[in-house]
Length: 332
Length: 60
Image (cartoon, rainbow over all chains, first blue to last red; front, top):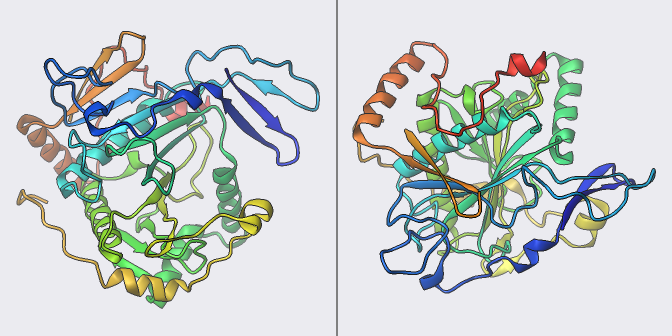
């Protein structure tokens, strides 16, 4: 059963999705549900022998287009609502052992086009207020399938973390007349020590306020609110910037670097979010090779992060591993 | 970019995205249009895709 239960102390929705307890957990490679279905072979989620990029509705969704009625009665203190929304899986590649970092920049560019298409379509649904694109990578994050993939949640409300960013951005705009992320970007470029790499259209940095040791944020230089507002040239530059950051992550400790990657764009509720600025955030759980940063008492119980490192030093470490990106085609 | 949508046995949808040479050329034309300062062009419509609603319409 699944439903949305209101958390009166925090003022936010909690999704219960008990069916997810039975989802596929780290299957052997021969039985990966995200691989193509080979003739005579194990029938996977994808019923064709090959593909480039595939998107499908999650078999074990937290939110669904036709959710069941809540299993409990709402009260005045405890509102309950059906968990209406969409949960999609985005399979980046048919190559089981690949990662986004391993994929050529051309494939990342394709993925950005797919993200843009999904954002456009899901945003248009009348019950969707926020489209959240993300990837959990690595067992350290809790992934249950190793095949390279990400996810998209289309929420029937603006989730609290985004709502807080929107609120802070609006307050900054009202106080200064400027975009908060544009100001952050200007400050990072003025200082320079925390920048990991940059191009004409994007800046990747571990910002001054980073909560994780290797928390890279990727900001578009141009003030824009969503993927759909990017030009094709910007999508190509974003692909190159992502490739550079992902490769640097893997080189850092000479391992496939675990992370959460989240795209923060404007909501889809039809409101005016001109004050907001699209960006991508990475939250890697490693603070050193083989050492995890845990979200422990202060982080989880009080909401105050303790970062054992300085962004200036960690950015320099990553910057040392930034390498040029090579496109196979000459028309980048 | 092209997309092809199918329905799985349990009713869920699955979308194949393909990027062939012809589409790459269309992308190139789009890129030139974008570079000229025009807005993003609409994607190829899918059978069964959600009906697009503009942001302005949503506001109304």
